[in-house]
Image (cartoon, rainbow, N blue to C red; front, side, top):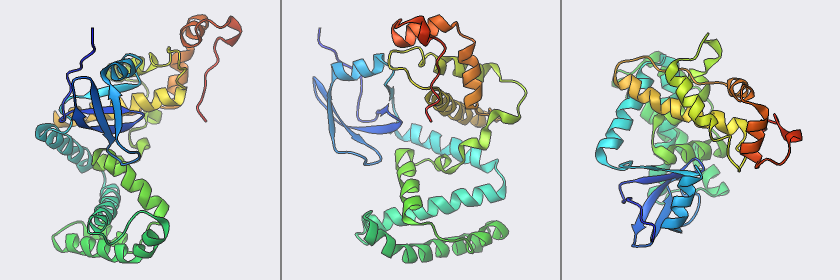
Length: 279
């Protein structure tokens, strides 16, 4: 029987940490385009997509591009950021300004992402960002923290392009918040919600592809950040993210032979207990 998935242009496919737009849907194939523009149009059969889903290499985010979902993500991010200190909020605001001013100039044909044109435009970009900051101060923003932004050195092309790529994945200002913001290093115990997220992520280690421990930690923390958005919308405090060392400890609690057999197909007990840090 032919494979057919219930997916539309309002949905997104997330693979390799990249959000993919559904550009076209036919009876047998899907055309996908990375939201961050990292590659050209991709075409997959439904069977290929199902295999990726079954192998935990991709997930479908239903309604990702619907108006309600987009508004909810924006509200959740704004709520999280509103709880940060003035200095942190100012830094997020600064990076978002640089990205939005650059993308506006790019859309107008004033600049592109090639090295020389981008570097030549940085001075003008800085002036536009400064004008936006001054406007925000006039509108009653935190003048003390925003004023400090005016004395900061403008980012180079490498940093700017990194910000642009991160922003274009989700258009979520939370991408500019340090991942260590909710790091679990100072907490005495992990909540049941985080423990459930962690155990789910660890299951990806028990897979023939031998996903490394750092990847498991990244996946767990990505899920925790999504959980935090829901918590904040319900006026609850966000959970702290977990450290790579915590993931190590959880995996080491598993029986060594079972871990090896599941992740390596039983290629010998001499490999048992070997964890990859992904350095």
